[in-house]
Each structure stands twice: as structure tokens, then as C-alpha cells.
Length: 131
Length: 299
Image 1 (tube, rainbow over the protein chains, first blue to last red):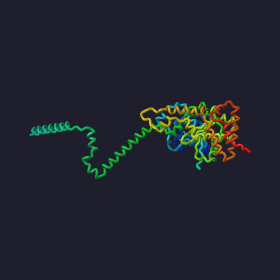
Image 2: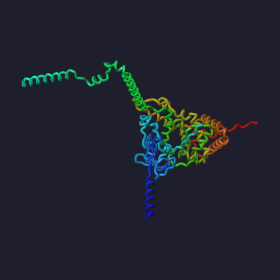
Image 3: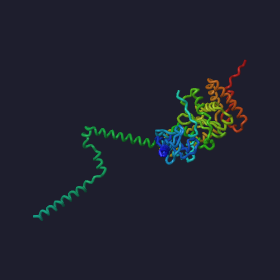
Image 4: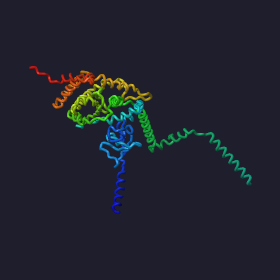
């Protein structure tokens, strides 16, 4: 009897921890465009394309394990992954926000927006140190 | 008696009503006038001056004027062209986006460890606080290119089929990228691709009209021409090669790697037809070898 009770309490504890979820905060997309990825791999499929300054809910979930460079996020109804280097705590000063009329006039199509987001995923970026 | 009193009361009421009606009809006030009465402080000017209220009102007036001006500036700012520096970074990426399928950069690529290797090479030569973006492309038709990025950063392109064909090491890739960095720093690209329209329109305002997008179209066309057809002149190649020679001499290991790389390129390009256009764009490994070869001593 005691064993059953212990087992059931342990199982219920496991269930609670597995659904544990915490909102880390609201962050903003930094590059001109970016993707919410299906998995935490640069070349993984895109769930949706978002543009600079789009708010992103960063979530910590015991169900999802993420490598340190990636964040598990929610954007509208999509849950996926964005590289942390693309997220900012403060709303960034975006090109399309600074020059809205010029940017709108370019009238980019969906394929261009998609590729622009992919571009940042493919760059090998670096910066030499300060002397 | 009561009848007399009723008659007097009726007469008085009649007089009072007709007076009120008459008065109301002769002095009708406009809403503006009423507002003016509220705003016009002339009648109590002295009292207000003593209380400092007129000064406060004037300050308020000034604040409103400043705010209004800022609002107008903000609205006009929405019609600004980006600055020249911002346009370069934007157009470089726009060109990469427009040529995504041709260049085939959206593919899973091997990790060559270029980031650390190139960083080390730059730092070893004293180039600090340099931002770079390297994009590996999956086509033999574009071997290499360098273009300006945002805020002083550089965008460097390199072909994976070319890396594989030549079996380039990390160090050799870094040396190729260093050459491209020197080309970009020398300003050859901007000089060749830039237009009068860019200089004229960058940073200006187009309120009341449509933006002149032919500036962007011209630049994109010039990018195509520079990267795929025009390339660099002998003079420019000479200057870059001499600069490489001067910088790499401090590190014999790097200088020897550069020399060997040029030899490798020379023999590879002679036999490989697929890369025949390379020499037209980057003339030429054979000449570069001559330019950096130590002078033969005459006894």
C-alpha cells in the first residue's frame, strides 16, 4: 500500500515538472528579418518569418532542451527556435522603422522576405577583439 | 381684491418674459467669442503679471510650438532616404537576397572553422574591432567577392565548390579572405559600383513625392557587373598583392602560405576550364607571384 502511494506521488511529481514552463521575458528581433525555426538548427525549416523589432516571448520549458546559443520562443501561435544573438532586450532601431516610406516603396515579395531572414542564419559572423 | 392682484401678477410676468426674450435676441454670442473671452486675459493683465501666470502661459506657448515642430520633423523624417553608409549595407544584402537561387547560399554547409581562423589572422596583423560576415556559396560561378556591410562591417563571399576543388586549408581560406578585406578597405568596390544618384539622394528627403528607386536598381546592376564581369584591374591587383606582401612578411609562415596558395591557384586555373573567368576578374595569380617573388641577385 505504502509503495503504491509513493509511486503515485512520484508519478504525479514527474508530471508536474515535465509541464513546468516559465516565460523568461519579451525580447525583440534584431536583424531586418528572421525566422522562427522548427528545430534548433540554422538550416531547419521556418515556421514563420518575422521582421525587426517584432516582440518574441522567450520560454523556458522542462519539456524542451535547447543549446546555449538558441532560445525557445513563442510568436503568435508558433512555438520554435531563434538564435539568441538575434534577440535584444530593448526594442532595436530598425532600418524599416527609420526609413518606412523608402522601405515600403521597395515592395518586397514574400520570397525576398524569406531569403533575407535565411541570410542571417547562414552568415558566419565574427568581430576581432578590442586592442 | 383678489382679482386685482391676479391682474397685476399676470402683467408683471408678461413684462418680465418679454424683457428676457428681447435681451437674449439682441446679444447672441458666438462660440469663438466665448472662447476669446476665456483666453483674453487683457482685462486682468496686471493681476496675471503679478502672479507670473502670463509668463507660464508664454512658456506653454513656446513648448507647444517646439512640440509641433518636432512632430513635423518626425513626419518628414519618415520620408528620408537612408544615409550613404546605410544604403551600402542594405544594397549588399538586397543583392544577396535577389541572387539567392543563383548563388545557392541557402544550403547546409560544412563547418570549416573559418570564423576563428580568420579572426586570428586579422588580429595577428593588428586589425582590431573589425566586424565581418562570411557567406559560403554553393556555386562555382562565383568564386569570391567582398562587399560593404552595415556600419563598417565587411561581407565576404567564398565558393564551397572552389574550396573543395582546391582542397583549401583553414589558413589558405583566411589568406584569401584577407586579400578580399584589403580590396574592400582600398575602396575599389565602392568606387566602381557607386553612382552619382547615390551621392545626390543619400540622406535627403522626398516628402511630397515618391522615392527614386532607380538609385537602388542602378546599384544592383552595378553589383552584378562588378562581381560577375568587371572584377579588378591589374593596377588594383598589384596594390593589393604588394599590401599582402608587406603585411605577411612579418610572419614567414603566413607569407609562405600565401606564396604557395598563389602557386596552387596558378596551376589549378590553367587546367580547370570551369574557373576560366577567375583570371579576368582577379588578374592574375601568375602576375601576383612575379610581383612578390624576391628579386634574383645578379652576381
